[in-house]
Every structure is written in structure tokens, then in C-alpha cells.
Length: 112
Picture 1 (tube, helix red, strand yellow):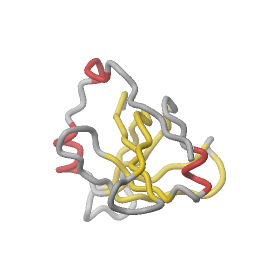
Picture 2 (picture 1 turned 120 degrees about the vertical axis):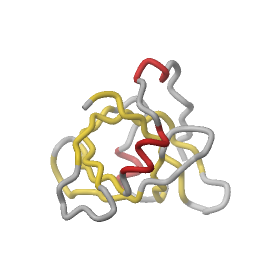
Picture 3 (picture 1 turned 135 degrees about the horizontal axis):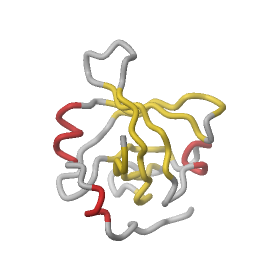
Picture 4 (picture 1 turned 30 degrees about the horizontal axis):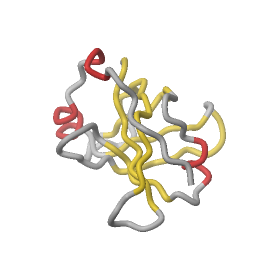
């Protein structure tokens, strides 16, 4: 299992994690702009960035690399498929201590 550490100097991006989590419920994205679309519920880490919970034995987990920037569509709870597209940095992949076989994949919006 690959464990990656946090990317440094995220302060320059300036997006507030609480604002994102109050407004958006889920993220949807493609890897390399092709293949299947992945949809994950956004989760809250009170001390850090929003994250998604990903199974470590899934293909998407292996394809997500710390430092990658992906176009992710952020969806509101009542949204009917009209989300907002943000460039999103994968900041860390950390094994989850409560859900065996899952990892926290932290996200940081870098541009819209």
C-alpha cells in the first residue's frame, strides 16, 4: 500500500474548506479525461481540507496521485447534474484508521 504525505504551502490557494463543504455535497471526475466517471461524497475533516473516502483496492485509488490536479465537478445537494467545475489538487492519501481498507484522499481547490 502506498502512503503519501501532505503537499506543503496550500495557503496560497485561498479557498475556505468550510465554505466548500457548506455549499457542495459531492464531487464527480474522470481520470485523464477518459474512462468511467467517479462520484464521491465530500466529507469533512475539521482540522484540514475536505476529502473523499476511497477503497484502497479500487482502480481509482491507484490512479489518484498526490500532486495531481484534476477537473472535478462539485455538486450541491439538490443539484440535478449542474455542478461547478474546479481544478482540484490531491493533497494527501492517508489510510483511514476507522474504515479498514479505505484511505482519506484530501482535496484542495486550486482554481476555478
